[in-house]
Structures are given as C-alpha cells and as structure tokens.
Length: 336
Image (cartoon, rainbow, N blue to C red; front, side, top):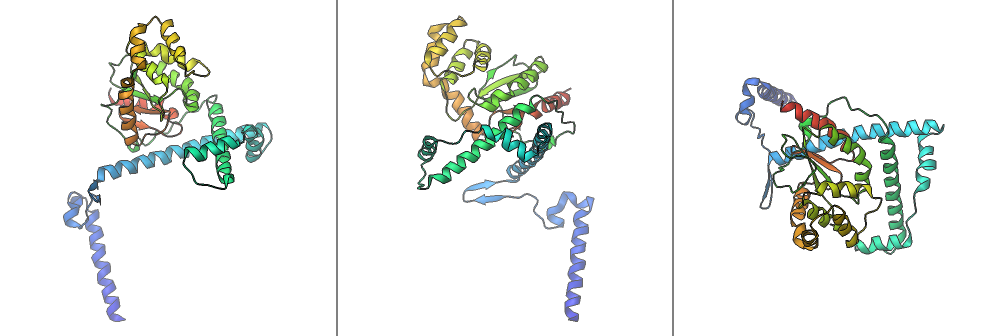
C-alpha cells in the first residue's frame, strides 16, 4: 500500500510538471518538444489524408451552424408565442389549430411515387405515409414562421462569431451579374426560381441589394438538382446583357412555365437577337458552366437554397438571409 502511494505521488508530481510546462507562455511555440504533444492532427484513410486545416474548417462551420440555429430557434419560439397569445392559446394548441390544419395529407399516388423515386423495397406503405405527413407538417410550420418573420422588425445586435464562418475559393464560380461587378466586395446569391424559400426571402434580399448597390458586386448563381429550361433562358439572356430583365420577370410570375414559347416570347418582348437567343437556349453546352459551378458547390458542402457567399465566406443555414446584411457590413468595414 505504501509503495502504491509513493508511485501515485510521483505520478502526480510528474503530470503537474507537464501541465505547468505546457501552460508556460515561453514554451507555447515548442509544444511538440516540451510536452510531447502533436498539435497538427491528421487523419489518414487509405490513400487520403485529412489535415488539421480541413478538420478546423469543419469544426468552425459546425460552431457557426449551432450558433445560428440557436438564434433561429429563439426567434421562432418568440413568434409562435406572440401569435398564440393573440388567440389566447398555448403554443401547441395554436400550431395544431392554425398551422397544421391546412396541411394536405399525402395521397396514395404521392406515397407510391416516393417509394418508386427512391427505389425503396417497402411493403408497409403506412411508414412512408407517416414520413411524408411529418415532412409536410414541418414544411408548413417553417413556411408559416418565415411568412410572419418577414413582417417583423428583427435585429441581431450581438455580432456573430465571424471566425467560425467557413470560407471557400470563389475564383471558379460561374455567375450572372446583378449589378456592376467592379467592386471590392463580391456577394453571390445561390438560388433558383422553383424554390419557395427563395421566393419568401426575395423582398428582404432586394432591400439589401438596394442598400449596397453602389458598394457591393451582387452576382446570381442558378443552383438546382434538376436544371429547368429557365436555366437555359437565363444563360441565353445573359449573353445579350439582359439577365436582370429575365431575373425580375421570372421573380414576378406566380408560376413559371416550362414551355419553350414562354421563354421565346419573353426574349422577344425584350427585343433580343432571337437567332442568337434560340441558339444559346437550345444547346446543351449552355449548361456546362452552371453544372461545373453546381458540382463545385456540392463538393464544398453547399446544398441548400437560398445560400450566400460574401467574399468567400459561406452563409448556408436555414435563415441565411437574416445574417447577410450584417456580414456585408462587416466586410465593408474591414476594407476601409
């Protein structure tokens, strides 16, 4: 027993010495030699090496996502409490009576299509039905909160942890110019016209574009899993410097047609060179730069729309639009 106490004592002294040495400012630049600690983490999977920089970027991005998700959750809860109190209801009662009551239940066709499109081998279709119903409810709740949120004056005064926003290389991105591109700040709007969330944020986005129109270069990236004819039309219109006319028109129509005549008539109304427009509109090569940019964004783990990139800093969480103004403002101050 006495020998064990002596061993424990010496171990305590030894590790105390190591801790003091590692915390000594004079030894911080030589941790590898002093403490025997390798500060450069590295993961090797067969022939692939994941270095410290990649791990740190992933860690920072997750921290930023956690922070913004927490902010969004607090705002959502506040909105629901406020709206429920107007009806003298509890939040759960309000959600069930005034939000979920408008959710359409999945049809048998929708269930079968989901099973077919995802190559599922399921005999019990009730599982898919419950999953789709849950998805519809979640989407309806998000849609409701987003619509109310746009009517509220919300300011996030506490600066975000900008050091935790991940960055990507923007040199290879193909985009359409929304305004003059000769500015020191580049802001990429990643969206498409079939996305309801994109439509819901357009009003706030246009206000931000108007606010910084003369000091920031705004650029549009068409991003979708399935590239519709609107993508061809945007490319063809952009080749004749009429992207913004098409962009505003497509944003103003309730439902975009997938008929060729819709886009050809639109091009004609803007007095475009129709021979050139039809040539660009009808050739598959028109999509190549858009597809290359899509693949690049996916490789950098950008999957959602709308998302934004401000001088290489990525905003791609659920309510990215709410942090866009602050990030632009911060970046402008840094270059002054």
